[in-house]
Each structure stands twice: as structure tokens, then as C-alpha cells.
Image (cartoon, rainbow, N blue to C red; front, side, top):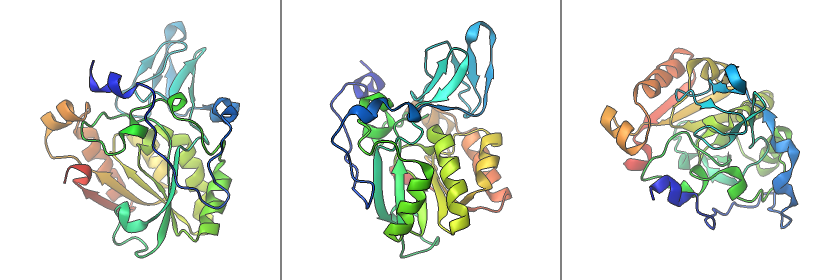
Length: 258
């Protein structure tokens, strides 16, 4: 049994922190809320009802009723859907320095959220209870949380930023994008803490609404990315160059393996 198979075993769960209006719910009926299913962006149709996801460099080819690598994007009769829209499994009001951002609204709080899933498989992952599980394996403890509700809750909590963090925000792209669109006019910055494993087109669209990006850069080593992250280095470097080119604040560091 490999690590990914082991982490799919039931029973592990990372508890979220209750915020005003976002307290965890006891009822489990919310787990099957149809609002969690949302049309995915960036995919193309293939023959035989297959689709190819165009969100990240994996470009998963997905058969009907199957999912891609991240575990939360499913082919439903030839159309790709995300199953984590409005389905955060961790919500906390953290210091912005914990992300870590040290020069983006220092000394303030950041409403930090994540859904299940990741497009990497880092062997040292600190948040494996979120990143290596499918959404149905982690209870929807907060019920359906709309982008508007995330933004209003951040305002009530006095948060100056909304951080897409803990797991990998690339895999809840549509949810992140809509939250960032809603938060930008309120001057609550959307900030992304990511492995940077995303294709240029979706990243370019997202950068229109983000205030800052932190790339958890693992190492300048192709072999490490392949062996220990099950990914590749070059797309991460391209993402960092793109963020810099678009004039969005960029932090990049060794992140979890420092």
C-alpha cells in the first residue's frame, strides 16, 4: 500500500475553527448538498464522453463518472464539475504572518480557508488530512458557504485578507476565484498560498483579483519534485514569473521543508 492509498483510509479529519456565523454543524445531511457541485472551468471535451482538465499541468484525461488526480473534479456525462464549491473543511482566523506573509498588511488577521484535495503528493505534507482526501471523506462541517458569506464573515471578524491556504487552492479554483471577485471591492485582499502548479491561462485570470501570492517553493531540483511531490518543477517556475510579470505581490520560499 502506498502513501496515497493509506491516506484514503477513513477516520482522519482536521478540525476547523468556528467563526461568527460559520460554526461547524452537527448534521451530516449537508454532505450531499447539490450546491457543492459546480461547473468547472478550463477543460475540453474528448471523444467517448471523456474530458481533459486544463486547470493544472497534469491535464488529466477523465472518463465519464471518474475523477482527476485531485479527487474533486469529476466528469459527469462529458462535462467536468467541481465537487467542493462552497464546501470548506477548514476555516480559521489566523495572523497573516502564519501564511506566511510578512509584508502584506502585517499585524492583521487573515480569514483562512481550504477545501479537500491537492494536485501534489508531498511526502512531508503538514495538512495531509485535507490535501490527500476526497471531499466525501471529510464531513461538510460548515454546510454550504457561499463566496458572499465568506467575504461578509471576514468583514465581521475584522480580517484584512482572505487566504486560500492549508490544502491546495488550485483545486478549488472556481470557489477561490468567485470569493476573490467578491472581496476585491471591499478592500479585503484575496491572498493565495499555493504550490504554483497551475496553467498560465487560469492563473492569469485569477491574478486580476488577488492581492498577493505565496508560492511554497519546494526546491530548485527537478528530481525532488518528481520523487517527493509527484509533480514537475518547470510549471512552478513559470507561475512565479507570471505573478511577477502581472505586478501582483509575490512571496516564494521553501515553505514546508525549511
